[in-house]
Length: 272
Image (cartoon, rainbow, N blue to C red; front, side):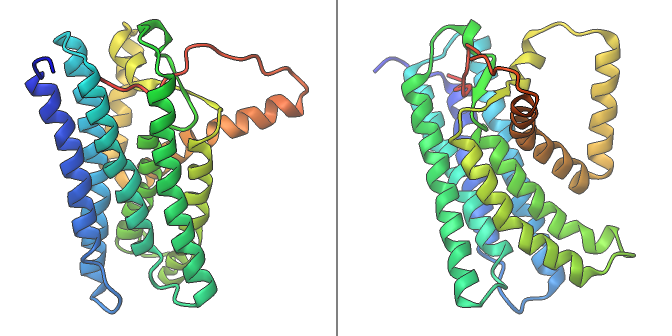
């Protein structure tokens, strides 16, 4: 085996450690515990999945910058993604819906969580077979990328944590019920989108590789401030809008009778 690039490898392992830590904190959430403690664990667990996404983006950028991309790095990245974006969100889903104790509903949630994890693994395995070494082809994802799917569920955990505090005029019981009902249905939707063939834009590489106008930089800074001021709602809106954009666009195109031309250059963005 050739020499291993230290920095990209450490960043990739940081992805896996963040996913493992997310599972650890989610495992502390139990029925009957004080709601303040449960909200804190939901917040930390969801935030660690977002931390894994940051590591996942940085390791590829570091590998390309140092010209140290390798098959070893790509395989390691897939294994770490399976933990952070497959297992960790599925386990977090079980904790978000643990109050559903009725046997039919409880069993359905477990099946959906398992299906989500399986679809994430299939998504990663499909990429390993279809990945093209041509950098020009790395412009689009084929199916919803697993980090974005994990971000959808992590955003739900943040929303579950923050809504009772920041939106005091809402009926907390109804809000919590709506989130618990939406979580398994949303997880099922993003699981199926991961194994679909719908094209998704590769925003990370487009931002890092292209020059942008000054106005775009201003918009990006404003977006960062909005996320910092209201992370729960803004992250929820951003990730779910991204996840649902492809099926909505596909439905509109089919509805207007326009042909859906195949788009080349679909990629899952394995970093190195």
